[in-house]
Amino acid sequence: MTEIAKGLEGVLFTESKLTFINGTEGILTHLGIPIQEWAENSTFEELSYALLHAKLPSAAELAKFDAELRANRELPAKLVEEIASFPANVHPMQALRTAASYLGLFDPQAEETSEGARYAISIRMIAQFSTMIAAIARARRGEAIVAPRADLTHAANFLYMLRGEEPTPEQARLFDIALVLHADHGMNASTFTAIATSSTLSDMYSCMVSAIGALKGPLHGGANEAVMDMLDEVGTPDKAAEYINGKLDRKEKIMGVGHRVYKNFDPRSRVLRDYAEHVANQQGKSNYYQILETIEKTVIDRIGSKGIYPNVDFYSGTVYSDLGIPKEFFTPIFALARISGWCASVIEYTRDNRLLRPDAVYTGATDQHYVDLKDRQ
Ligand SMILES: CC(=O)SCCNC(=O)CCNC(=O)[C@H](O)C(C)(C)COP(=O)(O)OP(=O)(O)OC[C@H]1O[C@@H](n2cnc3c(N)ncnc32)[C@H](O)[C@@H]1OP(=O)(O)O
Ligand SMILES: O=C([O-])CC(=O)C(=O)O
Image (cartoon, rainbow, N blue to C red; front, top):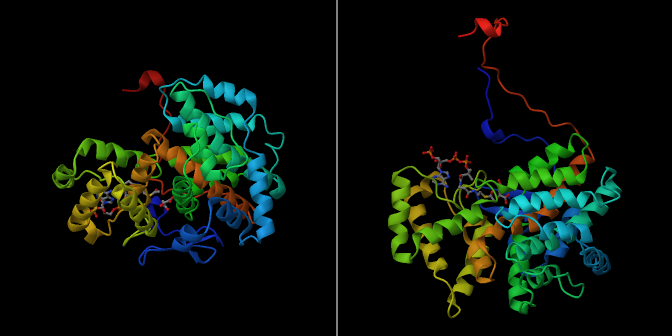
């Protein structure tokens, strides 16, 4: 009998030097370096360089790359106008998908697919995704769009544009760590989607728009917002265990737990949990962390034996929420970070491109003949 790899589970379709995951032992490395070391020591700018070049930058290379990102933050004025007129009630991921596509209209290199062009476009998109997302957030709240500043880091500039005031160094660093943790993750659904599009030799903007669409779904990047919905529904920590037990009894899914590859724990969620705990311990903060702690314990007690543990989307929202970021922007922020992984993976795959085209086992009718419309039941 023909074996079907449902969900392409375990199917190896390419080689990559960027990211390694051992889902049984909870190991994630970029360029062989553990994610915990990236989070502790590095920045989003440095990891983006490392992914795009498959090597750690020298100090001079990093300074040049950072300067290029800073120089490319501004959006075309027409796009800013367009974002300001988007309907306020659309989901920000819809707005981002549209804005990213619109951005391509102003890029003279948009149709070029050489590696050099893909790289130059990647720098612009990494820089401009941040500006687009902050602009979408401001416009949605009816606030004036804040122009980017070139004297701030990528993380600090995003929070500045979003809130209209500079973050503290601690807030900027916390957000930077969140970006580092989300920047790449092997052949996840959105990266795979970007690669599938690029495998037809399509352009970078089409690849990124496809990837945004794939990230949006609640089984992937959209889960971080869904977790926050769940926390709001639970309300207070004392109700969390009953709420989760009820959901599991009804065989409903819990958002932010479970993973196609990690069957023990997701190392990113551990890092985020520590930061979420740190933030929660500061005076006057939300009780989201306490609810999540109880949910984690209840889930592991009930279904941990199936390999269900918190994933990266579980704790990220409470960190964002304590940074003053509204929940509808959690998934756009995922895109703000993952753009680096998408671009790097597309560039890497395209070097030895092969059209992606799997197959399905046909189970439909055979030996039929066309029936005229008037003779059909
Ligand atoms: C950044 C990211 O993309 S990380 C993932 C973000 N997504 C989410 O958090 C959404 C919730 N999680 C899920 O839906 C799933 O865990 C997925 C889609 C991420 C991975 O699923 P799969 O690899 O297909 O796992 P699969 O569906 O085979 O699950 C195995 C068992 O665990 C159960 N299970 C998996 N996830 C969950 C969950 N979130 N809640 C409850 N039960 C779950 C399944 O029902 C299944 O049980 P069974 O064996 O009794 O039928
Ligand atoms: O790898 C996956 O399937 C999903 C994930 O955790 C990510 O994209 O960060």
